[in-house]
Length: 232
Image (cartoon, rainbow, N blue to C red):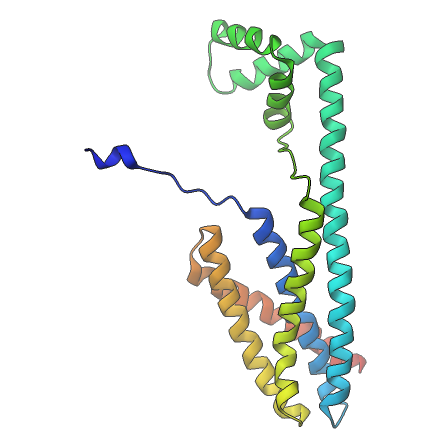
């Protein structure tokens, strides 16, 4: 049998999940590192650094998770608001909505007779008509009902995991300068691995993603470290 008949297109469908992990991990890797690095030159023991770092991770994960939850809720509310508006318009302003459908299909080069046939079919199924307008006129996809909750949890957990990585050396080494050096190396390696995995999941070049993530995260951590040292 022809092998082309078995061709299956694989498309990545977890973009929201990966985006939340990226948001949480990126901040988790850089902010606690900068705080710990800034304190490393000001104290003689890692105890205070771990206490401050732990408090920052707790507060940061809550704040980031709350931000993800509110963003998810906003997406749902926006979709529902636009959905209600489209439902009203196909009842109150059907001619205008038909013309909007026609304009969309004209952009794809369809003939007027074909467009008329499509619009007449849509008028017989208002629910599909509204769904079409939401996707192709407004570019909106229906959010998952659990989007806000899942986003909050994913971002918060990712932040905690990311934040523990740069703090881990401070559990092992008692001298802040030594712990800082190891933390910097561990954080850069983590950024590289994180970027590589992100590239694998998103379909981009894993090596390119690893380099970009390492450079971007390293610069962010460096700037934050500089500010922390100046202010400490």
